Image (cartoon, rainbow, N blue to C red; front, side):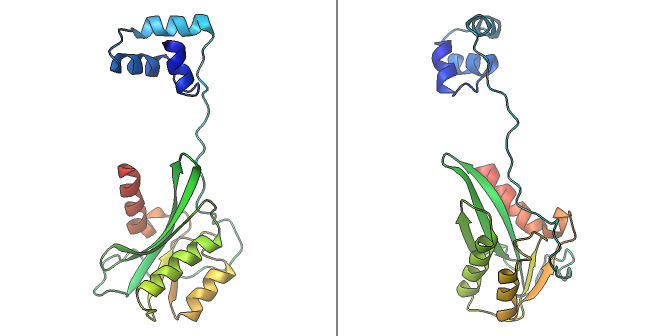
Length: 191
């Protein structure tokens, strides 16, 4: 039974996890006994540092926007200021990247895009979807981090073509984009 649990976990369960799994199936097992059997059978869990994708690459020489938002997240009307960010979700098929655009008046997602790659097209698609959903308003402050995707020529061109006001967080300061970070935290809590 221990060997079956170990194999089913793809060799990732240690003796504590296997003991818990057996006990959940109403099989009497003590941690010490399971640990001893695993050691004698040469069953050792694969311990590796969990890979965490990087969603922001701010080490680049691309132009950046001034921080027009300056942590002012309360807006008096819709389409005054939006914020955007990218996160990742671990799925059975691999990493899924999610880019969102949130209206700071309602704190609702007004545009998003997903992809198995994190590149400039992901954030361009999310902003394009937000623009379409809101009827292409002019003069909206579009606030993001300083990631290279948001500094790309194609993204900056989209900002300019739609008469948006680009705004970016200070380097390495997640509090400057707290609404997006909070939203992603809620998603990951439920996921």
